[in-house]
Amino acid sequence: QFESISRAARSLGMPISTVSRRLSVLESNLGVSLLRRTTRRVTPTAQGREYFNQCREPLTLLEEAERVLTQGQKTPEGMLRISVPVILGQTPFLNFLSGFLKAHARIRIDLFITNLFLDLVAENLDVAIRFGELEDSSVVATRIGKSIRYVVAAPGYLKGRKLPVEPADLELHDCVMLNARNNETDWDLVSGRKKARIHVSGPISSRDFNSVSTFVYRGHGIGLLPSTYCDEALASGALIRLLPKWASAQIPVFAVYSNRKFLPLRLNAFLEALAAWQSPLWLRE
Image 1 (spheres, rainbow, N blue to C red):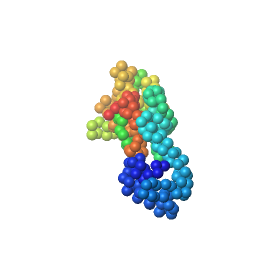
Image 2: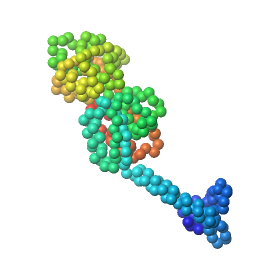
Image 3: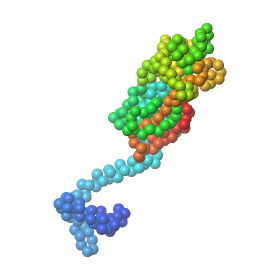
Image 4: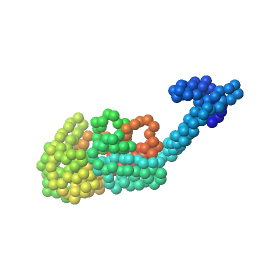
């Protein structure tokens, strides 16, 4: 292409000696002479010209692929595959995603709503949001918040009933349970260094906090709700906090992904937006 090793070296940003050495190695590997060298110029042999013509199209495609990739690292774009638990598949998170898409018009989202802990690599997922301590040490995790749950009930449910004084008293009451990964029939509560595990039962369970809170509000039993879900209701008297010295242990919330290096801009943009979002399910760190 340049008919000069020195001009080729300048184009590549390499020393002339390096280009000459690599050319010799290539000729040795191929078992043919690619160039005729004279004191004045370098010209391709017939085999060299054929080799260059055969390589030109793949090299052009490679350069184009590199251009597309580097351009994608300047502007957030492309498909973002996200997995979230069922409790996030509700209006607040969907509104967050809607705002994110409006702010990043070149990003597309493929959303998986499931309580299964999908394998990020096998399912080709970019990121997943997970509650609780992580068992898989191979993933990269960014802690985005924490959830604390209170024992609460509606005044209508408590009317005419004896209020629980100790965690064990909950076993005598109807409770509304969250059916997340498993039926949460055991509630783990803490008060300072004290811990209690209580087996609860009740008329209904659900897979999302919207449903759980609705049945708690309507007096079907006692619920264990995120503080962010019930702070306003507690302040207004719509709900009453029971066992105020007790609550769930802090439940960490993570965004997990498979690789720390060379994150696509679309994933970086999502992680930044997620960290800034005020979720009704967790407190920001």
